[in-house]
Length: 120
Length: 114
View 1 (cartoon, rainbow over the protein chains, first blue to last red):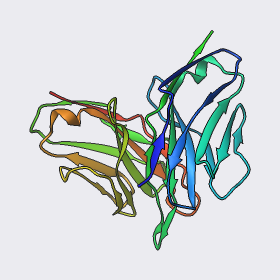
View 2 (tube, chains in turn orange, purple; view 1 turned 120 degrees about the horizontal axis):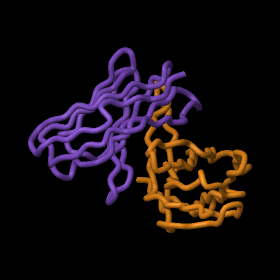
View 3 (cartoon, rainbow over the protein chains, first blue to last red; view 1 turned 120 degrees about the vertical axis):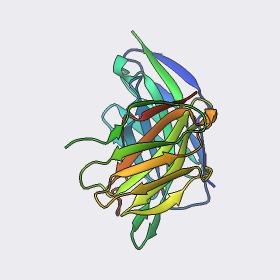
């Protein structure tokens, strides 16, 4: 079974600064996906960034980037130029890639989350 | 394109009752997954449906069941409700094939069991 660990229950950062959220995972799979999801106070979960395990290059999406260390099973999220709208719960998630005749199977395993507060 | 919709948004039930939650995926999405979110346990996977078939199931008792219709809409049913079933139930939809595995979440249904 896969496990995802987020060791920082809460973090805070000043507006315009950079913050890094940590995530480690445990799996015996070689083919998988990793995600960071954001859940603002309104509760709608939004995908922030995605990383495919077979890709060595770290994913980036505007102000969001990841540091993917496959051997260390580490997947941290860096938020640059933090904005007030970045205040949210951030979840790291793992998806094993399993393909059957009907397509791929989708099951996300989530970490407990990190509550990020961006202060003005 | 409309997002994932869930109905109802809020629900209050008493112990022993049963409840049905509904999820309408994004048009064209064939995979629907359900998750339970609680402060103590976090987000836990319930089950996933693709083309009306359950493909994955989490570690929940048989009181939790679901189904998917031919139009990809999905329902989740919880029978004999317990206080511990109080949670936010999230539905997520995906294309369901190939590398289209990004899951789009709905706003959730907040279930309170009294």
